[in-house]
Image 1 (cartoon, rainbow, N blue to C red):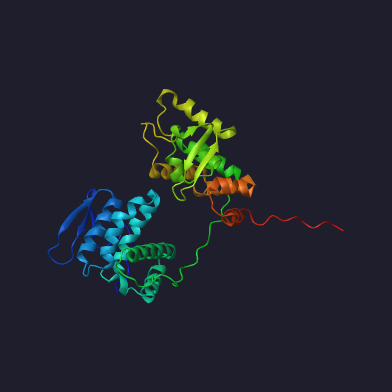
Image 2: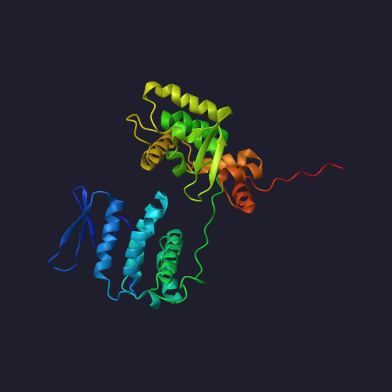
Length: 326
């Protein structure tokens, strides 16, 4: 079985010339096939070319992956698609030419061990994707074999326990451009994920609430527009004046703030402030600062209370009272 190689940046048979990424065949007479200037789009097209060269049997994993990318991938959230698009090439290199029903747990274990040496977390994510692809293969009738990922243990991941102190949050916000500061405030006051923040529109505000359909869970929230949240929204309106557009978080040209724009701006601000935490830690800070698990669970959109308890406890620990002097 072919073992996976490092992803993006070191993908075999994929090179950048100028601004364009190309698929390049092996051998003496190499054929350069243009893919795209966008790396993520190029990876999808690269995977399709690799799948065609590794097709073999109609029930090869490469063929299943092609159908998966065509029918399943478009329905996923943007961030999930982006992650999966980077994971697919590794799976194709390792399993693409194999008949899907021939993949055994020991193949998956060998793959995990090879990937785990360099990227254990990515190995876990790639196994999860392989498992979902295999389940779809069963649904589509390519195989009736048991899922080879079942029973194959992943690598232990240390959950994040970073709690952002108030002075750290304020320091980064002071160093940030206005739209990044707006994003930080909205993230804290609504406790929503970046993807849900970036899609917020002014039209989502009606009947005194900001309505959010969470990308990841599908949960629908109606967040009351009052207090500090109302003040932040009013601040955004006043700063933009006549240039206010469709999006709560938008660039100066009226276009919505993008993922790269958000994270590059935030990275620049936290470096300038000399404070280092991730943007996603703001959501955890919000849940922890609430001090009310039931309220935090509703705002986070968690389906189970124990999810919220773990989320909060990992950052504040278990709150206990001290002993009394005799």
